[in-house]
Image (tube, rainbow, N blue to C red):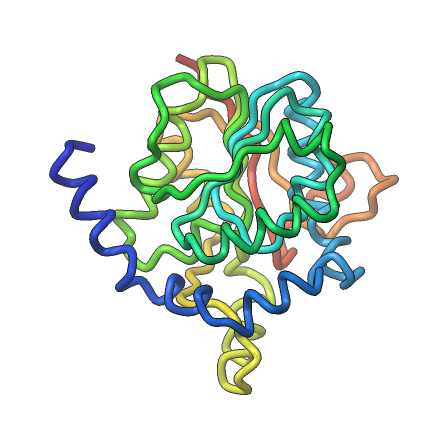
Length: 249
């Protein structure tokens, strides 16, 4: 992405419906109240999808980029395990709230390993091959433009070192996720902006287009004690699905 394109993308941030949703005070108040960390069902879905992929990639001692930040839940579980955990989001008000929560609840030693900065997913301010792992959990689907979603995946690949891993999870088109989002919006319970659900093959194709090799599919629809092969069929219908991919070159 050229300089002019990056400037245009950054100028358009405040026009994005997700930005307008997350700068609202009610959303920030829920984060300060540790809302999502107290919802066992939400934490369970993250553990069975996002954190499975992180475990497979191997976080210990690595430099990790986490693109997209609401309530900082991943940071509490993996700070101190990764050598450096960098969290970015384009909503500065949300980042300030997340930073405040981390300052209050995370030990001083582990807080030093977590950096938070403002950045747009389609134009990340990091050099090529900076991170061992780049993750976007429930983030890509909130980018309204299809071209920008593709650009965001390319950026994740760009900042990941060869042999490193890119992890993406998002709503599954072949699940109840689209219906749930429609219901939450109609009833005024949605606290986010735009959402675009993906079919598993669409995400796999997008990863390959960015020069990544998909290695492992997952979703929260599984029995954790079962072998991966036996969970293959039910996982295709999980609401939060995603891939672990490797950057080959």
